[in-house]
Image (cartoon, rainbow, N blue to C red; front, side, top):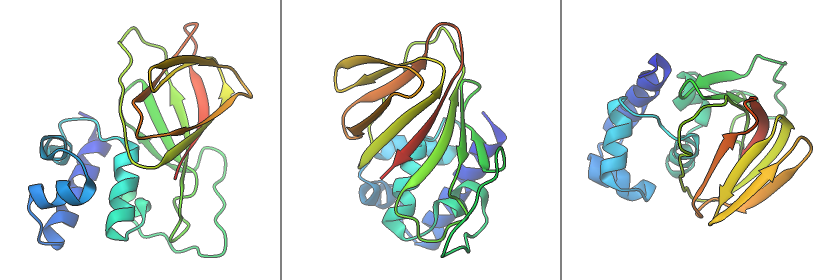
Length: 182
């Protein structure tokens, strides 16, 4: 599994240890099955960005600390230059670039997400909160709450992230979109 995911997993474990919580207590506070949390903390499985954001909100830390091990300091504004956001490649198919990671106390997480085309079945997930996606490049198949949608450049969607959802690049071309998790 990716080295970055192993580092994030180690930071999750460190946070849990610092809070003196068992894996069961941590999972309960994060409202997820303990088996999911233990798998993510092991570093042997992809960790959903929505979960990282939820952990940060639940325990009052910045997402930046979980993603990079660094502390966000900006409190008036934060500029992310093109290609310079904290980058996390979850798998070869998904790459996330955090766009507001240096802003302390942010209430939403913004990412530029790149999804490479592949023949794998679409992975569905759920998380607390809401999500907004705005397609910049390519064509994306999005499955939300039992509905299959196709989004093209300039299209956007806002949805309840507790509903099952997933995305896939279409037409054998990568998709680039802005995702906001609130």
